[in-house]
Image (tube, rainbow, N blue to C red; front, side, top):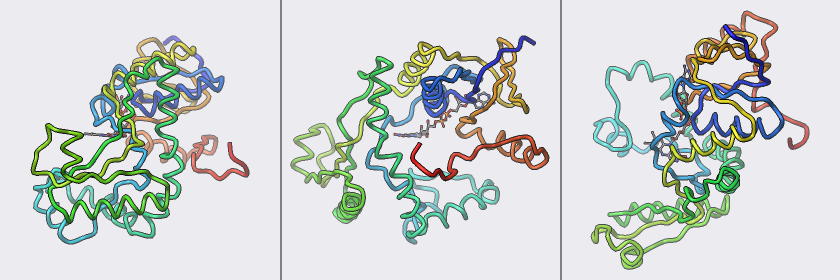
Length: 285
Ligand SMILES: Cc1cc2nc3c(=O)[nH]c(=O)nc-3n(C[C@H](O)[C@H](O)[C@H](O)COP(=O)(O)OP(=O)(O)OC[C@H]3O[C@@H](n4cnc5c(N)ncnc54)[C@H](O)[C@@H]3O)c2cc1C
């Protein structure tokens, strides 16, 4: 098979892989981006499109009995599960439960927030360079409520995020909500609006625009199968075998299969280096 040399191969062309590929290419690397489908056709295709500047705390597993019982009945839109899969996901759920402990969750938010606080500005910059600014709507988003208790609870949470991380929010009563969104159900009691977030009108179009920008910078996209990755790093594509000095795994929900195989391989090979992105540095890089 034809051998094509690159500095880095990025596996997975969802929003994560495409953004990584753009940034590496901008930093002077020759980058190959590989996916089994065209970019942005899986998880990044049709999500809710929110760039949640307020999301400094990742979603925690609720710990109150009421919510857990609601989830256990499998009647909540938040969570749907197959009883037969519970045993398989139990180790993950246990870790999720532990990491959702308030103290651990707060520590996670401290590092997570450093990324989140740049999420909107970074996307605006990238979208402008990719000629895709029209896909970003700087209109924030809002949570609406049917119960005063739930509304009050969200306000308390928003006040905490504001005090800790400067997250901006606006409390709307029923009248103000109706003025802003006259077509919403008149029974709604109010809302909390997060104005700093952007909304993406078409997530798939944004990934496609970023990919075009990546190609305009000199990067190349290939259709190929990441599961063929082998030490070297080599991966087979429709146009030949890519041979790169480093590989980035950005396969979204499919990452685990490959990373598990790589970790097992690394344990038995001394000349394979997996660089951990959380490695400490003496100065900001
Ligand atoms: C209903 C819903 C709503 C959401 N709303 C939001 C939101 O409002 N805001 C937000 O920030 N996030 C939201 N998300 C989450 C967001 O969509 C994901 O976090 C994001 O799309 C993940 O991107 P990714 O690049 O990691 O994964 P993906 O987009 O899934 O990319 C992985 C890529 O890997 C490729 N791949 C897999 N296996 C192979 C293989 N063997 N060989 C080659 N290629 C392979 C796939 O084809 C795919 O293109 C939502 C998710 C869902 C499901």
